Length: 546
Image 1 (cartoon, rainbow, N blue to C red):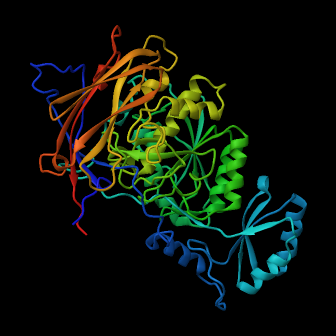
Image 2 (image 1 turned 180 degrees about the horizontal axis):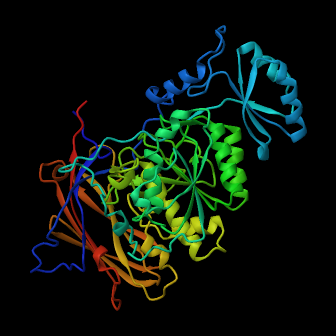
Image 3 (image 1 turned 60 degrees about the vertical axis):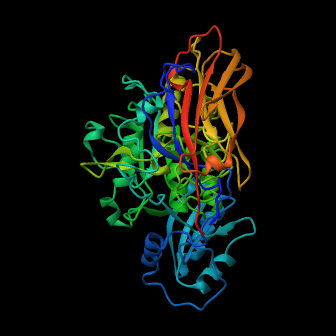
């Protein structure tokens, strides 16, 4: 048996409304919630060698291999490709047309084109045809594979009672600080949802969305709208973040929730050309496609904000398109702000949003508790639409900066690869220009420790979430009733500071763990949001058995 703080800490966390450290308060808040915290600094395994998962990816590949000729073995192709397909990007339209004319006599079929990128998707008969196609290309043309794109694998349901992580249910908007009168949020902003399509559902109040089916060759795709419906309901349903947004639905995923990198690239370009200002993509692939990257650049160059899921494999690394620079990459957290165990960790992660047990529409009639970075992504897309609807002059870079500058720090102090800038906060975002808001918060407890020792450091993080700077910030921390005081000094708006205390290892590994209570304050101010002034937790190391 071995123990490690890089594994799981048993923890009880509660925000304290104006709680002070003096007798008569019975030790602090009345209610506590059992939970689990993971050490975001730990090393995580690399993505699995086989991508996509066989249950969906193999079915898609098998379907596209029907009727293909047998061919001789050759050098191994990357995992997750659509076999007997060639993607080509040409330097000019004239070159593209010459190529299409020259291939007419070959056993090859033009499946799709993206004229704006001078790109084509070709299916060929066998390796000899592929080689002849390649010989038709000039030195300026670029050829590559077509990779499978999937919705992130759905995590298991959250247990209703006693689970380690806490579901949001119908409380995600309250948690984000969204007011009840947000009906105009997103008005005048066009958001493209690239997914499985959207079913008519009562959550949309009779609204009919423009839908563009890019998978016409697969009729069965029409029956699978669950995932896209859930994503869209979070974005713009009756209980959505931006109910006023104009949604364009681009069906780029089929009945298995699977598509390909070329069709996704085509959807991105068509969405931009149809006036989308925000792209929402709860999908991904680990195959790098030059044409998909060009589509991303096409959107970014036209001031389109791109939001994509970090993925649900629980690994180090995120899929494409989330991995591309300029894309806002979204991780998932539970209702206590802790990174979901399935949410991928990477330097590309920018921000986090609700992603465990979120109530969402499904199919044509149902509601489900939807989990995953798929659920987290439309919260951020909706927030971007809300910001742009209020000020259309903002650039995509400015919108992204507003979302991240007003995020609530969680996990390790400051930016971290598990949750990026922190969890999105719509109240802070939409009131960012309102003067006179004072809001000091105990943001989180974090133990950056690996291995045993006589003491484990605990970082208590404080954040100024108001719109005004605050002087003489004080933090008091009680460890099993023993007080420690810290003077943090002046804190500018959005600034994060932390204080470190040490926890006894024997007590930390005991059944009772260590109780930690904290309180932040500053003289002469009235806190606008007193509910986050303090935090209480019981920390305990859970041993791992080899």
